[in-house]
Image (cartoon, rainbow, N blue to C red; front, side, top):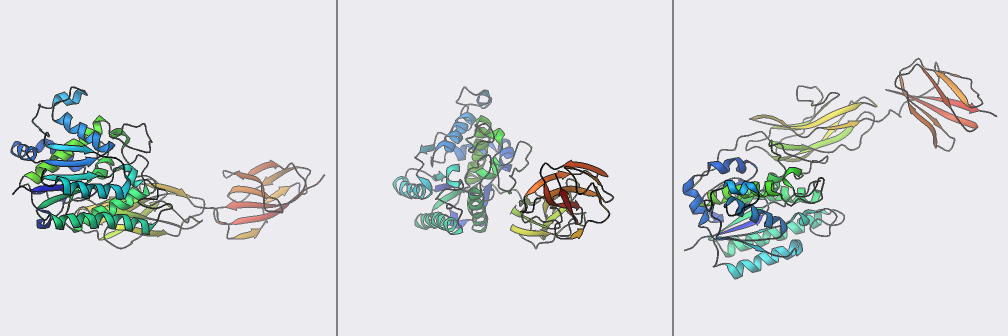
Length: 460
């Protein structure tokens, strides 16, 4: 009996032989590591993969992958990289890419379910891919406008239930999931749904082509995230000028995805055991929030535990770049993968800090992207002006100030609370300033740890 494979674009774990989904005992996840493994594919598996009849429904990003497969097949004359492949060594002529409209999150699920039933006897492998459009923020579908956990749950549950229904209806078939492709700036909606995809695929032993993981790693293998920790597409793989809101793969990106696709197909076709995954965790640092003069909130998101349990996680900070866990300034925020929140306390006022999330497993310690922030001035402790000499006071308009303390900022405030004068002092001992209106004003002189109050009078 002919075996059928299904592929859906979302997220899973690396490598295994052609077998029905319900028979799998471990996940098969194709991520950025598959690209470097392309050249090691045994010739004996290339032919087996080429014999698989595949149906893949897609739109624009899928077209660029299709073009990349033609390039790797060696049947294109341009760009020049296509001429480096032996014609038809990587023969994808039985892999049929079927274009379809962008009908939205639920429309694409319905299309896939219907086309599966219609074409079930024509192919061995079936697939559909969402577009970056289905992960954009501020859309009613799938994540809501504004962002809604209820909308996300509905979208994810509909997809999962539809796929599970197909798996039960066609128990001899194999389904492959894909993550949502990325934009260059990164999207909260995409990041949220891709996390759900990956966790499900790993827990339920699915096949996953993790296009998002491939797109967010640059040519040096560095994972790219934005300030919020959301994965963002590497601009070198995109056809649009950075920082474009989309990422249709250019020829570099198309060939890269085609190589990963071929690696997946040979893993499915042959009795290929996945390499043991034993690496550092992958994580990102959460954007700073609730910053005061002596505290802040951050945290992290551990998207991949490296195949080993995460036994410690948190954030580390310091006044120099690249703080690490040797610093005494760190938090301990539990264990395991996923999101966590960290409270930074005991900070100095008006100080620039650098912070990174960290995660520890048996392989070692990994760090998220570095962020920086500056604590507020301390406005909680106020004392009367004492040994700061301001003269003349009252004045016609111009004041001179002798500052024996290490002041860093001066403000002059109108009686209604509006700031009339605001300047950084850069640790000056003397300062001269002029006010162009008459009246009585409040003086605030900020130091690292206090605010000194005074009164200024401008007369005619």
